[in-house]
Image (cartoon, rainbow, N blue to C red; front, side):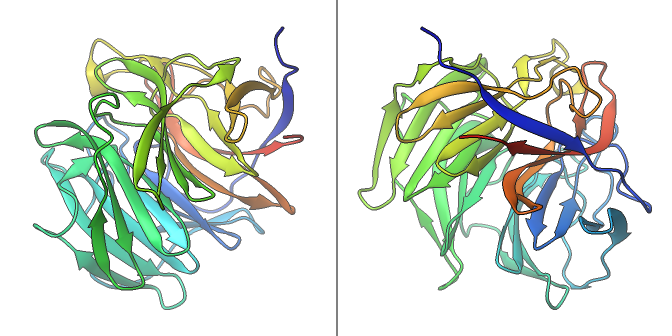
Length: 327
């Protein structure tokens, strides 16, 4: 017997000011009530700029952040995450289609960029990888490397400023681009991604034990997908959208995108589908290659989604916030 669907609500946020514009393969983070956006493309594989755009959730107004220090050059497929007032940026692909491995930080209290590591230090060059954080570390997993897709897991300990390489998950977890990556109570979860085919497997790394395992999930399992949006709400990993069938043109074209949202309970390992108002004006509709971030709005935890690619291969510039009503 199928589980009862969970209910959630999307709200489209109206935008004021001059924002980044339509783009995909970019990244956002939420620091306080401000959304920071960086990177991306309007034309496939062509980085747009290296401005740090800021969207104030209180006034719904965009601005460009003035900054000092060493800013990253333009790139696509970058990943970034925030811890407190510090934003961390890793990797991506430059205008020459070269994978990168620099780690930068941006301090939102001083508006200063810093280059923390590059070259032979830390993970190898990559793009379309995933990033997650806890109270001491920035975790980097997978992505598209110079010689193929990767399945390695690294942590940058920002307390002592050093990289740590964790054990490999083994052949059962193929190298992949565009996976979901989340940290829930001391365990790192790798969800789906593109391995050459859209994948539907879930893997978990116990940080304290240093052990990987493939997770057998149950319930209403989502179809295989990659480049979707994800966040943690409570002990649920929430996923939305993504590419369920790649384009014959690869990154130059739009694949088949979905508009579905699901939640994975990390305790019961059960998937359940969200009833989220699909078809309404407030719903983002099918898309992938979005920028997304976990955060809170009006006191409720949820998922913020900005832009991405549409089924018509047009880049999008809208912003939506998803609030699970029950979990």
